[in-house]
Amino acid sequence: MSEITNRKRDHIEIGLKHDVSMKIPSGYEQYSFIHQALPEMALEDVSLETTFLGKKIGAPLLISSMTGGGGQAETINRHLGEAAQALRLPMAVGSQRVIFEHPEVLPSFKVARDAAPDVPIFGNMGAVQLNYGITVKHIKEAVAFIDGDGLFFHLNPLQEVVQTGGDTNFRGLLDQIEEVTQNVDFPILVKEVGCGIAPQLAVELERRGVRAIDISGAGGTSWASIEALRATDPRKRRLGEVFSNWGIPSALSLKLCREALPEGYPLIASGGIRTGLDVAKAIALGADMAAFAMPLLAPATKSTQAVIDFLTQIMDEIRVAMFLAGARTIDQLKNTPLLIGGQTPNTLKD
Image 1: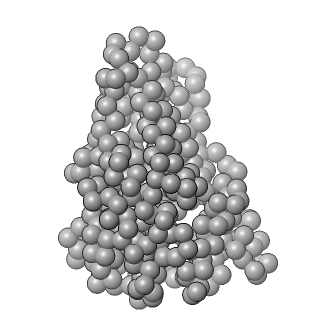
Image 2 (image 1 turned 45 degrees about the horizontal axis):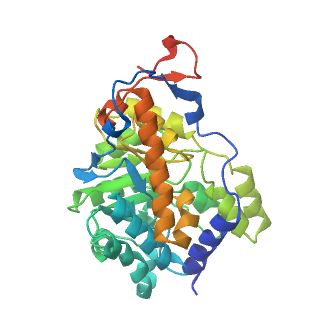
């Protein structure tokens, strides 16, 4: 196997066998809803349906980029795709660069669309690869390969620094991302991989044509820790350990980006979101939806039903949070005030 397929296999095995969560909080624990003892509705009145980039979906949840390219990837993506189809949720595949080096692994990505013909499916590529040979033509092909609805560029400078042989030339990428947005006929989205998006960058990405941003803040999976566990060079291992908790806390990144961006600009919350209550808080803070990746990995290795069971539980928790906060719809949830630290009313979110 090549280095890239070995790396993908290692990422899955490490994610399944090791605790690679950051040791810092995501920030969502600081917030609480104002309990509505008399919500004046029935639980069944709560609707999780919403839209994302003009597509109707069953709940404000994204099955985020995980894998593709080798090992268990095809099985994982099939289970995720079947769950996405059953629950009417969008899904993103893992990084597709490997397809251009090893075309034989294409089925491990294409299986997502085969399993989920009726929901949004997004491709994925490291933005830094625009400095290492990936072109607009490759981006178009990556989306066409999976009959996709758009593509995520992921930003992962810390991971690349710690990764043995990582690609660390991040020069000029804003201009190149803008060039892609101007030369494709599908949405380009951008996500971090667990260190958060600063508001200044969010504004710049929006200005350059990026259609939605996944802030993917600190508090969830630490890719520095994953790469440290892979490293054979002790210096790389130490780098991963030292920077294992680096990043903008997830809730803070979300709040700052929401305040900086135009009203209605789509934001996805991820990074340390582990419950439906976290999802509800993120939406009240300004997200349009929330994304899950690592929490779905173990269920996805087992069965489609295991993924459905996990996501159904999350959806139940969102529904209960909305019921107790008095929000019938996702739009109402977006305008539901939060307390900071569970303290006094003057700490309400504006």
